[in-house]
Image 1 (cartoon, helix red, strand yellow):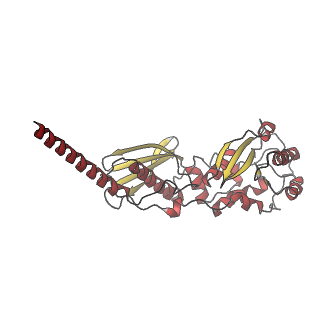
Image 2 (image 1 turned 180 degrees about the vertical axis):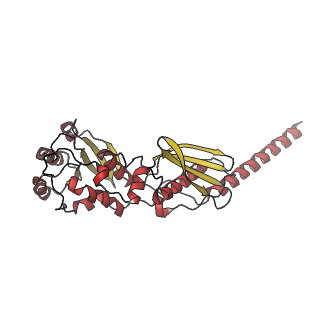
Image 3 (image 1 turned 30 degrees about the horizontal axis):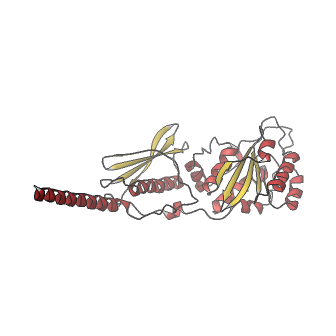
Length: 311
C-alpha cells in the first residue's frame, strides 16, 4: 500500500509539471514582444470599457467618442495599438488566449459601440510588436513652448459691443494627431468645454491633474476651476476661467493679480491661467515682472493647442 501511494504521488507531481509547462508554453506564444510596466509612463492609454473573447476573436471596447465621420487614420492607429497592449497586459497577468487570431477594436458613436478596425495577428496567439511610433512616451514641455508665443496682433477684442464669443470648436483648429489624443482621453472635440480641452491635452501629454486646495481655488470659486498639475516632478498651479455669455469678453485685471499672489504665496514652478476671454494690455507687463506666470488667453489658445503637436 505504501509503495502504491508513493507511485500515485509521483504520477500526480509529474502531471502537475506537464500542465504547468503547457500553460507557460501557450502563454509565451501569445505574449509575443514583452512590454515593461513602465513602457508608457507619460502617455496614458485610452480607457477600456469592455473586453471579451469569443471563439478566435478578442474584442476591446474603448470609451472613446467618435466623430460623425468615424475614426480618423491617426485615431484608428492609436486605438489599434492600445488594444494590442491591453491584450498583452491581460496575457502577462495570466489570461490564456492561445486560440486568438483577431482583435476587434470598438469605440463609442452616439452612445453605442462601433467597430473601428480589426487587428489580424501575425499568427495564432502571437501579438504584433509594440507600435512605438503611436504609443511613444510624451516628451518636451508644451507650457514652456507657450511661454515663447507672442500674441497674434491680428486678433483683437470685438468692437461690436457683443458679449457673446465663438465656441471653441469654431475658432480652435485641431490637428488630426491632437484630435486623436483628445478623443482617446474621452474628450469629444465637437462639444468640448474649455476645461475638457485643457485637461484632455495636459493628460495626453503625461501631466498628472489633481484638485487644488490653494487660496486661488477659493478666490475663483464659482468663476473658474483650479488644479495642481505635475510633470517630471514639477508642481504647477493651473486655473481655467471660461467666458460666460453676458460677461465682459476681456479678462479682468483682478484675475491676473490673484495669479500673481498665488505665485508669491505658494511658490509653484509655474502658475498657468487658461481662458477663452481676450487679454487686457496689463497682462504683458505682468508677464515681464513674473516669469512663472503663464497666461493663455483667447489670442494664444491656438498656439497652446499647437504646442502639444511638438511633444
